[in-house]
Amino acid sequence: MMPETGLRVALAQLRPDADLGRNLDDIAAAAIRARRAGAHWLLLPEYAAMLHGSRREMRAAAERAGEVEAAVAGLARDLGMWILLGSLVVPDGPERMFNRSLLFDAEGRLAARYDKLHMFDVALPDGREIRESSAYTAGAEGVAADTPWGRVGLSICYDLRFPGLYRTLARAGATVFAVPAAFVRATGEAHWHALLRARAIENGAFVLAPATCGDSPGGRASYGHSLVFDPWGKLLGELGTEPDCLVVTIDPAEAARVRSRLPSLAHEREFRVRVAGCPSLSSSDGIRHEASL
Image (cartoon, rainbow, N blue to C red; front, side, top):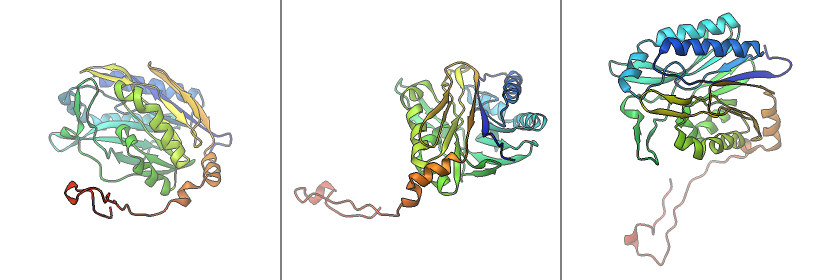
């Protein structure tokens, strides 16, 4: 049932390492802390149960995905609280993996499963290159889950840079976006706050973004700064760079109120793009033409 006094959400900010057992203990401690604070829903970050820069280590962790799923489902059931397992690694054949988000209800049942759509294949400002697609298989569909407080759109980390995903989720009725992440520091410092706030404002939706933080083995450094934005783009809570738990009470009905005042979803129109050339340029420049995209 929907809480009468609002939905109390808890965002766990964790620093996972290569010890899966210790990471599960940290998750359990965060869940107990959240429940004692009155939370109805706990959101865990991306790679909550294991984070290592080594593909071999992550693949070994994927073989224990069932253990992680059972542990988190048990916490949800025992504490009577919804839990989003921001992501865990799951085998896809003998070598590859899925980066998968799981949502459990307050009885420990699996309510939704989402495989990360967009692969983080980038060249960072410090010269490092990350090719997530070399080890992970991309998901094939967006996922929105019905909960007691409304419809929730699921996403993971790099998905945040694709506004079309969130627009589609919003048009499918999602009023809350979950964005568990392990943003690297270089991109986090530059873009994390701005992108999350934009997704909230564009769609009139709550954005809940639990994050990993600190240094993990294999050269993984995460930005932290778990955040909650309301549908107007107001910051409701933020953590720093250390492990912690952010607890915020939100009013899910606020999304409907914002959307009624600023109904951009209803005003959206289908259109095509016409590319117009400049007469002063020769056709050999490849610009003097028209095309529908």
